[in-house]
Image (cartoon, rainbow, N blue to C red):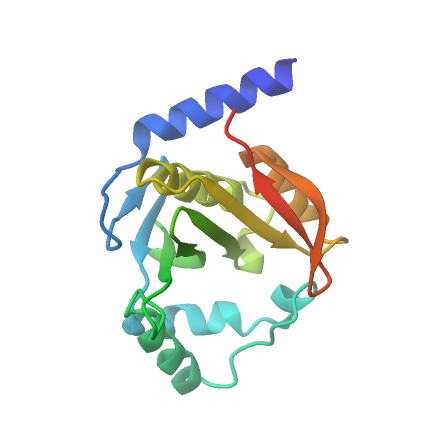
Length: 186
């Protein structure tokens, strides 16, 4: 029961700190982090972090092949919408003080979102992924997103712990070898 109380206290503290705007260029702030909409210029700060192969142990992705390739990808994401306009692509750079440490993302279709969090290896096990994911989820809820999913590799215990801490539960659904987790507001 004490764990549930701590989770509620954590969520309530974040709820009071998060800046809630309804536009996709929102800046979200927590006690330690500033989540800034991702732009092409952020490629240079994230390239060294995202080049660490250890980040991809549990994903089907690979490190960026070059700074130029990452910059091109971020330029596409900076539009904040899929080419056909059916999805909002919301990506935030995670800043701790003024240092980039990772990013969070939400692909929003109507009132549903698929989310992910990526924190650089030097910042693992310090609560940054939990803090960033929780803040993003609160913001998504504030703008009307009702169904929030995350796809997590079945052996990625660190991401599973983050998911549980912010209120996700695993489902029996598997997509591309990853378990689908669904957020349930508490």
